[in-house]
Figure 1 (cartoon, rainbow, N blue to C red):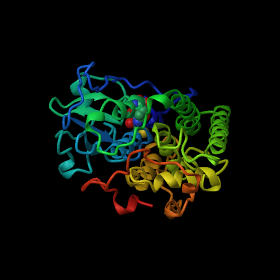
Figure 2: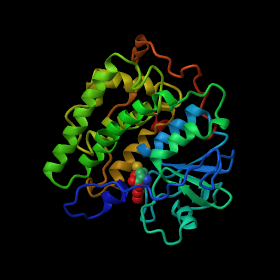
Figure 3: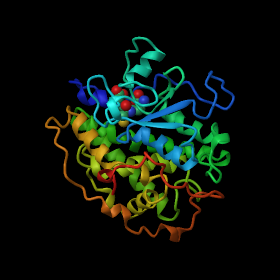
Figure 4: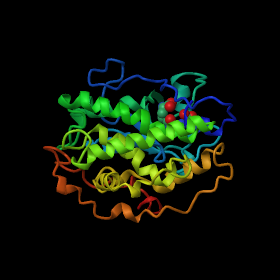
Length: 339
Ligand SMILES: N[C@@H](CCC(=O)N[C@@H](CS)C(=O)NCC(=O)O)C(=O)O
């Protein structure tokens, strides 16, 4: 069970615990789990509200996998049957023909009792879920789908940097990506304070690291930047207020705010972000912590487009590669979701 369910549940005094993704098959070049990489075979299902799913959205864009791996975007508001395709004509995903993501879970495992989570990759011919393992999906897109990458795609997980990326992303996951959830869903003061303090302690350390270098690991964009970005871009919109991570706002930390803006303005990052979906999902779905379901008007988002001056630190965003092209038709974020 993860935060969607946690937020709705009338829970007792148990600490927030994120369950392991249940379906951890991998889609690989050699098809070791029975799921070989194949152009057009799979469909990536995301919510643009979800930080874990947004990692896959960014990686897919940076690597140019749009033709190879099609995309379904769910309604940011789950109902009691969870994620649904109500943004599509007739309320059905046009490729999978289903109304609820749970139908793909059921095709994989009858009567699956766990949470229905995004990101999910579905096998189009059978309609069955392949994986909801958000930690592995982006690594496999970077390392297993290479045959289908666009020309000029960056290496997001270079072998010589993997140890460092793994170390940084583990710290970022524990204290930041998941730390904000532990703060937000804490059910007692002590638990909240420990999680919230941990978030900001880690952010201070990350700011020190990023003061003199453009990206988290090496001088090019890697998986580590994707993982930090998807939390930072939500920080002031939802984590500061809704999750009470409010010692300071992202816009008040000069280094992290400039770093986050730099990435936001890089093709493949900001063009995947929908602030409208983010705010409506968090404030309307987690009724346990926001019983009125009121969605705040702010914060103002136009600052995301202001100059960041991070290019003065050098760095080569795409290494030997190039920036991805424009967002493909039909995948643009609607105007109300953009900065
Ligand atoms: N698959 C992971 C993480 C992904 C995740 O938590 N996604 C959220 C949206 S941000 C979700 O789909 N939650 C609904 C649920 O698990 O019932 C998990 O099971 O904890």
